[in-house]
Length: 241
Image (cartoon, rainbow, N blue to C red; front, top):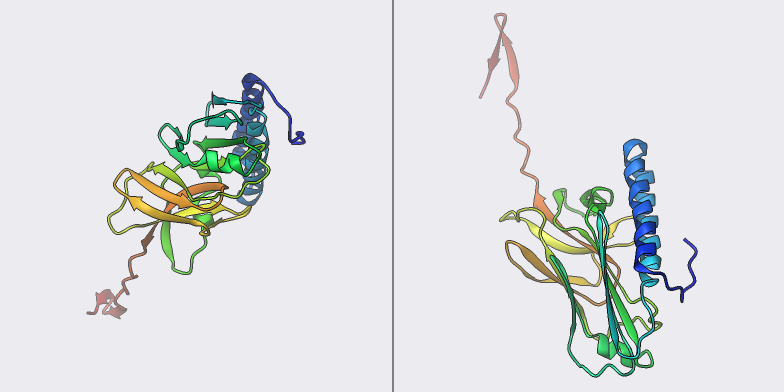
């Protein structure tokens, strides 16, 4: 999608574009190979980031936008040079993002914006098996696919880690190991995001960069049990121990 970096759209326009993307993904899922579907899912992430950026308008104080479609929830928060608070910005619903946007604004002439997007269904396309690990473990997607970005903010370096609190969408298995992962365009990888806290319902990921994130649980596969040999005996099958 070719949008100017400074483009501004009304929320209902952005919502309409997002719904078209969602419908296209649903249609493709019916008769498209896994490989092509992953490529489209990645393209959807990039297009969504541009559209979400178009929600951000210049402000001298602060502004907040919330947009909800059938499968996507978006929240943005923008601050300008006259914003006086030093509080950590929290964008939250079932999942939350805590970020020191004021410090980021200081490195951007006093203005900065953050966007937090929840893709409720994209985990069925960008699946847990796209997380390639050395060990042969069962992998389960434990969260929605989440994106965090700094639209219309030239210097995107995080001066301190941002905390993303992720709500589990499945029960946490006792012996399971959870990893905060990010999408690199073709696979889920671990780089720059660490698990700092976890309980039965939520996990906190501390991240030094922004991207598209998810939480994936690994459970080691049980060892295969060797079957005893079968020996033919007088027309019957004798199982030896």
